[in-house]
Structures are given as structure tokens and as C-alpha cells.
Length: 324
Ligand code: BDR
Ligand code: CA
Image (tube, rainbow, N blue to C red; front, side, top):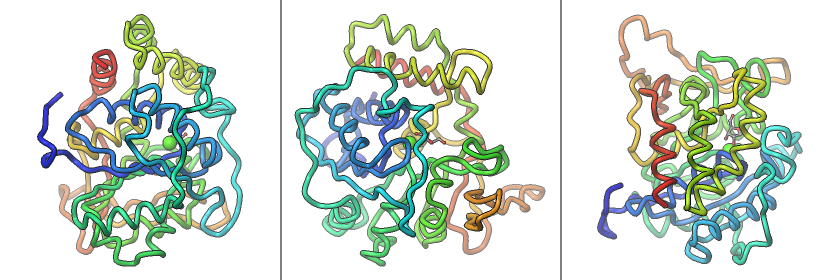
């Protein structure tokens, strides 16, 4: 972990549906003195935006950061006003597995998620990076609220999509994009520098049960909380991988957003989202035809799709949480 002067700290706004791996991503970021989380906004997805906000406030309590980061609630419905089903089997009914979650001591702020994003970006033009680890509804609403937002933020990192890998919530679609394809289309086609961290990368960075047990045996309350929530996540992922382990989705995107992980394979290409009502709804169609002639940047493209990272990242997460 690096120590950084206040001016050097990376300013981050995190938009999430605090679920288990969102919580791990937040704990990972909160443990980095080089990162300034200037706001956390919540969206429906794994659970409701209200429950995600409650879980976020609880994560701040666990991390000893109550009251230090503003938390704003965002959209409960998609951009076109629909409700999609929640993914309770993956994260548990309340989003944090079976872990004990008490009434948090902090409260959400009065402004909405999109308002907080826009206000922060206006106050600190060119300084703040957006990290999205849930459906992209809040970001799409923020873009409607302030069309100049694309020029106000430093960049955007999104956990979502499946470029060449299969989907997870449907055969074609990844959950965050599938929950609100219209919002994802708006965000991924907007003219800002975006890094998309899809299942191609996140399903290859797998945390093992032994790593979880090392967290469980720690003296750190943060590490033990992480082990508690990951217990449920590994129950779910046993049906995916055939052994007790779990993918590192949101925390990998977090690490890429702050520069801790540099992708080993990525391509800057146009990305279209399937918004049709058919079986491909929510699929991310990444134009990777150029891969046969190297990784030439596609003209006009601003979305960098991460296809691979080096592996071994879960141990970095574990070591950081053990040090908290
Ligand atoms: C994504 O969906 C959610 O279940 C996770 O929190 C992650 O953001 C993975 O597809
Ligand atoms: Ca998430």
C-alpha cells in the first residue's frame, strides 16, 4: 500500500448495488490511503437501491469510516421505468449473505445518486473517476441531468458485460448490463474514456476457500466480516465452478479503476448493447474483429474492454484486508 499526500489521492465516486462483491470492493478501496472515495451512490440490482444504501452504510461502519463518505440512494427502476428481478440467490435476500448486518449509524444524504454524481463532477472538473459496479441506471440519469458530464469526469470504469465469455444471468448477458440494457447502451456509447471490465476478466480471478479461511481466522474485524459475507458467495459459486471459490467481479474493476491492476489484454473498440426483447437482451457486442491484426485502436472508440488480467489478484485482496 502506498502512502499518498492529499493532493495525490485518486478521487473516486463509486456507484454500486451493495451486494457481497460490491462490499468487498468498497473495503478494498477504503483500505487504500491513496484513494479518496468522494461519494457512494446506490442502485437497484442485487437488491433494492435502499437496501444497497443500508448495506453501504454498514460497510462504512465495519471499516470505521462512518460519516466520512456521503452515501446517496439512486434508482429503484430501470431507465425505462421497469422493475427487474433481484438476484437474491447470489447475494442472499438482504444482499450481504448471512452476515449479521445491524442498523447502521450513518444516514443517506438528501440528494439523489445522479445529483450527487453531477454536483461532485461540477465541483471538481477533470478530477473524479467514476466506478460503477451495478446496473448503469444512475450514470445514465446523471448523463441526462448534465450532458456535459462526459467532459467533467476523468474517466469511467464499469464492471459489466461479457465480450467473448458467456453471460451469467442469461446465456448471453452479464447481470449488471442485463438489469438495464438501455442505461448501459447510453453509458457505453457516451463520449468519455470508459474501461469495461467484463466476465472475460472477472471470472478468471478466482478466490479460493483457503483464502477465505485465512480472512476468517484473522484478528481484523474487517477481514472477518469479508469472510462472513464471502461464505454465502462461495456457496453460490460452488454451482458455477464445481468447488468452493468465487469470482472477483467488482473488486477487480475497483483495482483497475485505481491502477492497482493493469490488464494484460485489452482492446479499445465500439461496444453495442442488445436492447431487443429477445434472448440476447443485455448482451455486450464488442467489435473485436481487429484482434487478428493486433490490438489497433478502433477509430472513434472510447471504450477499452478488458479481456484478461495476469491472475493472482485475489491474494492481493486478501493481503490488503488482512492488514486492515
Ligand atoms: C455483477 O453482478 C452482481 O451480482 C455483482 O455484484 C457484480 O457486480 C457480476 O455479474
Ligand atoms: Ca455489483
